[in-house]
Length: 317
Ligand code: UDP
Ligand code: MG
Image (cartoon, rainbow, N blue to C red; front, side, top):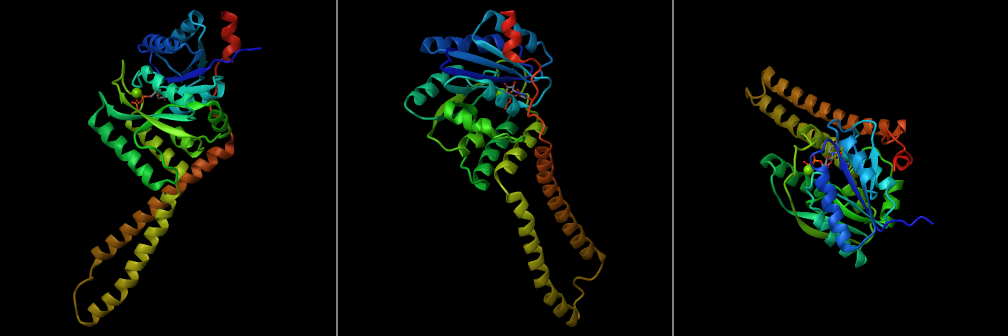
């Protein structure tokens, strides 16, 4: 019978060739110290900087490593999803490949798991080496999400977390395309707990989340867990209808008393532009949701793996 490892570590990576050897070394050190059986799934999300070749080389030298090579860049959340799909450990730890999530924190996560918790998320108490813009937008993002969604996603927790096998099996059934895994892993329930940690600076290279990707990610998060943007159109509609009902008698009275207020094109133009703007924004929001429905309806695979991982690599071993 095949012996499944105790711990699966999933590290999604996109052009992280410089961090890779250090990542493997530190993860190996922590897990060997603990005496756990483990595997490391390195999910290559369409790297073009030689990470792919390095992963294949590392996998031949180190039997703990299982490579998953994507056919192109599918994005961080889908890379993590692939890692969860292929993992076989009794607990799965998701960790960034740029060493911002210190592998040593895995000890705390595993300890809580042994105490019986099924989702152990790491909470960032401090963040080193991040720009002012990233810190403010991230902090704002977590607080808005907390406010407007029904799932209470813990503030300042990222994807760095441990999931028990029973949680992973539920997540594997949730095949939505635009994913916000940290929300999904709260939504499922189970026994959850947070562990504080200091988020380090990147080991090497630059962030792979430029502003554009961050914005899309935030929108995916909100649309996956909230209808509030859709309801905004209704609220705005009621507000502007209410205002105009109030305005009608006021204007009539002013006109009859001979006032010059509300004459001229400017007032009309501003009102028309304002309403036009509100309508276009509402339409755009509607479009975002419809686009997501369309994506789901197409039912394409979430990601494409270039090699059937284990077959190809086991041959080489
Ligand atoms: N990543 C990925 N695919 C992408 C973008 C990022 O697999 O399209 C990986 C990246 O290599 C890193 C992790 O996801 O291991 C987190 O990304 P990053 O460090 O760039 O984000 P930040 O920490 O700046 O938010
Ligand atoms: Mg990072």
